[in-house]
Image (cartoon, rainbow, N blue to C red; front, side, top):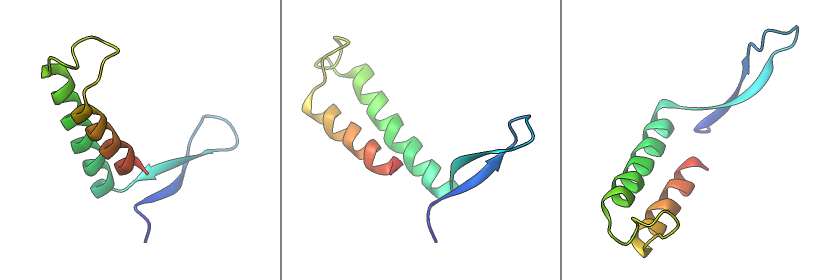
Length: 69
């Protein structure tokens, strides 16, 4: 079974809209990866300039991207 599924979301019109929905385990995995990236980038001196990211932040962001796929 896939970690994500498609579900109909009531959009208020006659036809619903399909929306991709993650399982609870997948959602938790995505949240942990994002929080790890966010915690690092807000505390790291190499990441403090808005457009700068250190190699650790790049690796954490890649882990987050992998978690949402």
